[in-house]
Image (cartoon, rainbow, N blue to C red; front, side, top):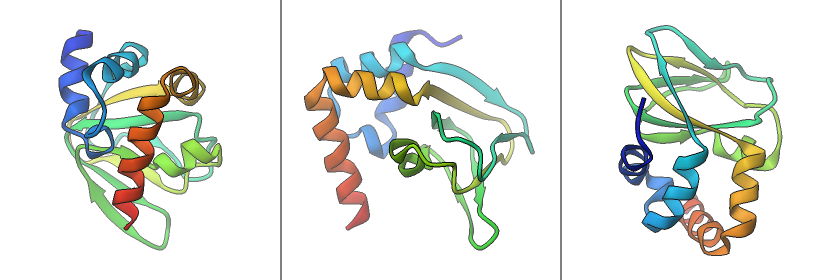
Length: 131
């Protein structure tokens, strides 16, 4: 099991959290559960409710929606579906041993509601990724 400090260091390596302070990452890390995936294990399926935000901190995951397929590493998976409270758009399958930090979306929204600077930092990073 990872400590909160270890989770913070792992989250800092993910682009979405690049503009977040250590204090803000501590709020997120404290609410995250750790999960290790085996090769071929499905983390979530397209069409399922996106009520858990998954940060891939080690390994690789394939995202597939039946039209496009791509691989990701060190990323938050299907973040837009989670924030919009829509079903996952992709099926996420582990490509080898992978580790994710997962957080209930309601908990994330609660943290964002109490930490406006964190919300702004995440929105800025999401906007820069879209442009």
